[in-house]
Image 1 (cartoon, rainbow, N blue to C red):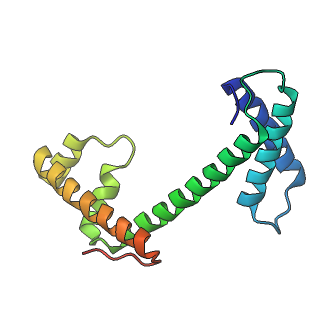
Image 2: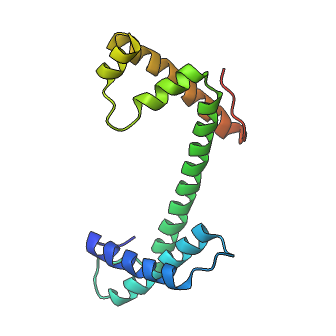
Image 3: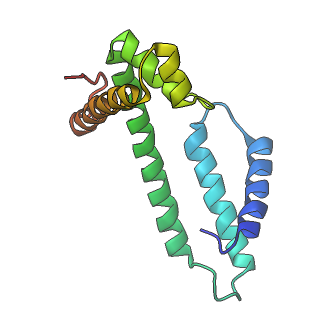
Length: 149
């Protein structure tokens, strides 16, 4: 929503100061924080009005709304994935979690499991496909408890 990384960094600092100074635990933090960020962006853009690279307020508000919608969808997908992971048999879930742990090398993981790297890749591929379908079904149905198979 801002024309440069420097502007974004400056506004982020302003947002953090406001969040720190005015936080009230009785309110929905995420919505409040997004509102504070939006207001700080608009305030910053008012200062830059003479620059032709500044978005108008309507566009900034539209971008902020879309960003919130995308984040909410991402969180819903993340919840669906977590539910789908929990539905996997323990061995498959452990494989997925091990494979996506930072610093994991697939050849080392395959060796630890007594498998060839190709066999491990194929197993992971099948498991990812199951998870993808489970997440899609969950998102389509809006379910809290996604199902595999």
